[in-house]
Length: 219
Image (cartoon, rainbow, N blue to C red; front, side, top):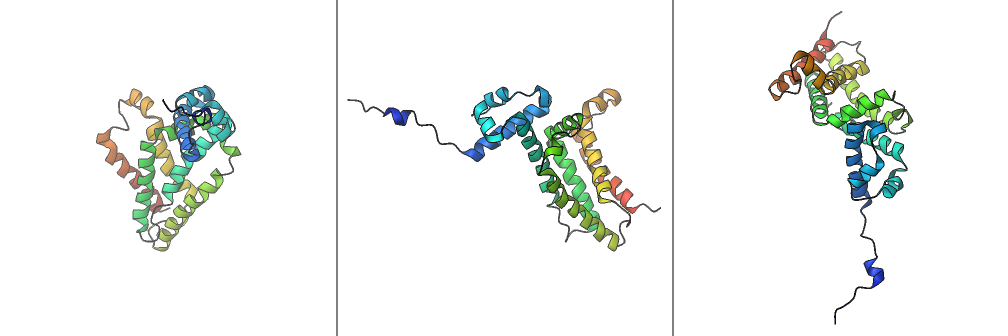
């Protein structure tokens, strides 16, 4: 006689891994929002592409807008964490600046969804980011790292003393964002793919040169 499984056991839900489920949702949501924008992305579609349900997405994140904000926070958190890994104390200031610029270059190239998310949020005039309680705190350590590099460079006579760290951050970010965000329009107009592997090291070195030229310029 075959052994029957008790109904209560058969109906028992599979054991959930909350962190894994949340990470999976964020990964899919990141691509959906980056690809379709905030208005175009659908929670139903995000749920369909994960091993969960729309109800569970709302349970974990509280709604579409909060899910979108969590995606933005994770995206910015990634680059901020990398920036803090630059060896400020042991690298020569010039090498540290090149390392930081190259790190941003590599990250933005390998995370095109991040660039699209930033562009989309600018279309919304940073309405969602402005509500984040996490993002302002994420920026502070990264700026502290850059500030310490600049201070060491100034003390060693390598860099000008009148440099604003936010200006340097903007200079690095502008180059790296433009290269990825404007890849297709730039290629259509000038017939040059800025992400062409053959030009990669040229642009990577060029970025470091531009930043260092600004930091060492005399007035």
